[in-house]
Length: 187
Image: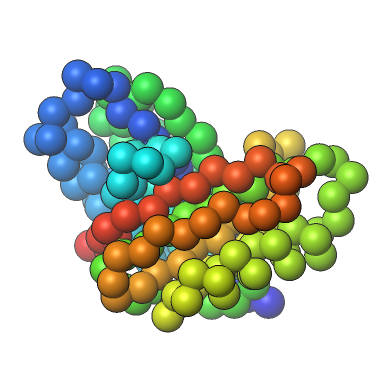
């Protein structure tokens, strides 16, 4: 188990958002990589069939970094100044990663799972790891929710060199949110 945590922001943009506006949002997210606790960051640009258009991921050095990141004025400016005015839908998650983050590949997928309260952590981890392995991904990141009262109980990221269309987990009692498409590492 690593100390790293993953912060995930899922966004669907309003229909009036131009391609230039979308690029500006991604560029603004890239500025967050200069924050002290951010060790890696990127965005998955969802295909039209995905549940969200953008999946921003920020890997933070330790669990205590979540609060510092979430309350940093630069992150607030990104959310309020760049992203919020263009939003149609938004969701987020924080997860403790099982292993140090490694991302390689030009294409990626993000799976976030909701689960009934009586679900065991091992069931969640088994489903997330099974999904990630099933993608054939060269690199992946899996983690369970960091903290309580989150919509998503766990998340998984998978990265490949070629485009792929991952499937939703077969476990019907989990609510699955899935985003996949081209991946960009944020500078």
